[in-house]
Length: 511
Image 1 (cartoon, rainbow, N blue to C red):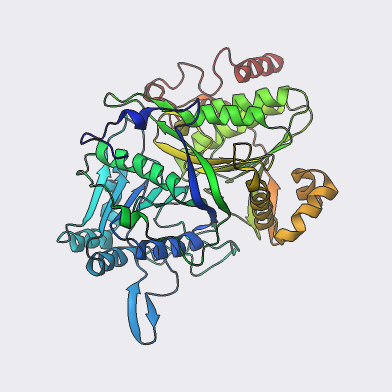
Image 2 (cartoon, rainbow, N blue to C red):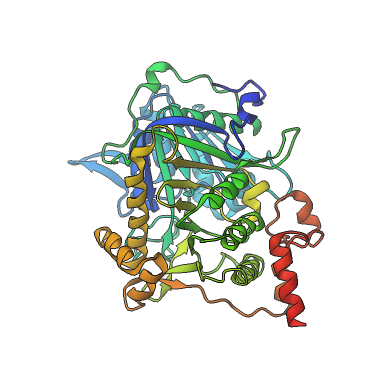
């Protein structure tokens, strides 16, 4: 399906059920952990593109290298193609006749251009090549961001997840405490970074193509012609990327703020609520933030029921930047403290991954429930991702018809992530979980004397000013109105909600 010339298509806005925009089958699908592998596989996929590469992102930086440690891929003495993203895109345009490359980036990034001198040079170099089109996305409510990270190749291979093609994303699964290859374009070394995305082939990739096409049109991009059947039958799947899932049905969920006559979409929030309520034994999740009142409410309600599941969230130690830390870190602390008053069985825990004595920044957005449900995308566990920013998540539900064969791979992925964070071999994890009975007990038994560890987040004590910031939604609004009236509805602890009632009881006890 292609949207109309105005980028508005009724099918794009239709949900098949609460929390789900569309179900579609994928010929192959694989979760790619950390950007070293992602950038390498993505370059191979783009090399195989026939007619179109459509890249939709929060950020995009032409200065990064898709393969660290080299400038060109060499075959013998002959230079084949460059590793630097800006040069690589130009090389593709010159050597792939008929290939169009369309890039859409959140508009806020325009302010960063003045500090990215060589990126401006890249855009000037691209200018004569009419098959390269770079646009800023301004089509969103005040205070919102375009946060989706989607790449679609020939409407047949796609990527959806948390990794942007930008600086400070590249890292390997080893997450070395010091790695000279982990550096910014101007040479400054940055810390370890954990991220994830999913590569998809087939009908589900075409569905993401519809979503990306619609976003492109709404942002004012020129009309895109349909990709030919021949191009859609070509194979852009990277040769060295093993398929985790084959012939699997994927669900797709979105967030989009109300704007320009288009209704608000909160499928992602509704899906979180449904999926968390369905958990029986455990939830393993990774998120950059943990401040969402809707997710907090869903966890609170599940913990309040009989036989609550173990809930373990791997999380960044601090938000990036001083201002975000003041709002997001304090809101996280108050939300965790509030959950603690209902978590009588001690089933909830938030953990920070470390390499040596250095915390690893968690940018991944993953949730695994009972090894039967896998979810990955761009949405964090914060308010913005529930209603204001544009987001896209994909998920595998092993209880859907035809998906029974996926359970083994979902479990293996959870074991792989625990192994990565705990410095283990993946084969060790199932036995350790069986021996200790839970993820938290396994982590506790492993201790902190390893090179890579998960450490339980220590709740800070907040002063009165910090408590006020914690209750505010000014930097983490779910709607534009909350941006201007951050205290009107009680911030994260809404009046009448279960979280709000618990918070009120706690405050009364203190007084």
